[in-house]
Amino acid sequence: MPVSRKRKKSQKSAAAARASRRRDHARRVSLSNMVSGWTEAFTRRVEAARPHARALAESLRESPATGTALEDELCFRLGPLLTELADRTPADTAELLAAAESGHLDELLAKSDDYIGPEHFAEALADAVADTGADRVRAAVTAILPSPLRERTGLAAPGPALGGPVLWTPDRYGTRFAVVAPFAVPDAPVRWYLWDVDTCTVTPLPVHAGFYASPEEALAAWQVGVGPVAAGGTSWRAADDPELLEDVLPALFGLTALGGESAEQHAEYLRCRRLAETVVASLPRHPVPRDRADLPELAAEWMGRWPDAQDEAGAVLDAWPLDVPALALGCSPHRVAYVAQQIREEYGDEAGPILALLPGWVDLLATRNGLTPELVARARPYAEGLTHPDVAPGDRDAHQARVIE
Image (cartoon, rainbow, N blue to C red):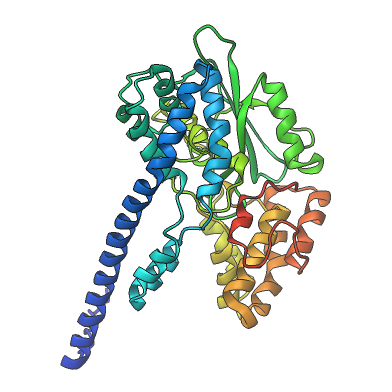
C-alpha cells in the first residue's frame, strides 16, 4: 500500500517571516482598536440617550394609562423618538475593520457620534425608570425590555405569558413568514402578536410587527403587506418546526439596529424582540429533526454546470443568502433583485459574467422549490436586469422595506 509523504514546509526567509509577524500583529492591533472604539462609542451613546430616556419616563408618569394601555403608549412614543435619534446610520462591521486597519477609526466613529440606536436607548431607559418610583411605568418598560436589562428597572414583574399555540405561514416563495402568538394579561382579552419576517436580504428581519385582536385579523394584515400573488391562499398552521421558528424570529442580540428602520418599525423594535424571546423560551429544547435542503449537493450540481466559469458560479453562491439553510431555496422577486444589486455593487464593471449566470441559478432553485410558472415569471426578470423599486442602488436601508412581492 502506498504511503503518502508529508510535504515539506516551504522555507521563508527571515525578512519574510518578520513581515508576516508584523502583518499578524497589525491585524490584532486593528481588531483590538475596533473593539475598544466600539465599546467607547457604545458608552458615549448610552450617555447621550439618558436625557431623552428621562424625559420619556417623566412623560409616562403623567399619563393616566395603566397596564397594556401604557405599554402601547410607550411603544407609540418610541417610534418617532427612536427615528429622530437614529438620524445617522451606524458604521457596519466591514467599515469599522477597514477604518481600524487604515488608522481612521476615530474619524469614522466621530462622524456617527450623533447616532443613538434602540440598543443604546434601552440601556438608558432601564436606568431612567428605576428612578421614577412609579411601578406602573416600570412595569410597562419592563414588559418590552430584553432579559439582560429587565432587572435594572427595579421591578420584579412577571413577563408576558403565552396564551396558546404559536401559528405561522410562509408565502408562496418561501421567503416571507407570518408568525402569530397569543399573549395573556390579567383582566384583559388575549392579544395576538404578529411578526412579518422578510428573509430575502442579509438576515431574517421583522419588517412589520404588532398586536391584533385575532389571528384572522393578523393574517389579513400580513397578506396585504405581502401582496395577493405571494400571499394568496395562505392560512395559519401550527408552528411545527422549532429550529426554523427560532431562526425566523428576531434574535435578542440581534438587538443592534441595521439602520433605516421606519417609525413604525422603531415603535415595535424592542417589544417584538422581547416577545420573540418569550416564544423561543417556550420551544422544546430537543426538536425533532426535519428534512433540510441539501445545500452541498445543490452547490455541487450548480458548480458542475459551469466547468469553465467556476469563479463566476462561485460568486453567485457567495451572494445568495445562505445563513438559514432551510430558507436557501426561496427565490422571490425581492431576493433575486437584492442579490443582483449586491453583485453589481461588489464587482462593478466585472459583474456582467456573474450576472449572466443568475437566471440559471433562479431556474435551478425554482425547479427544486416547485414554484409555479406564474411565480417564476415574476422573479426571473430581476435576474435579467430589471430594477426592483424597493431595492435602490447603494441604499443600505432598502432591506428594511416591507415589500409587496
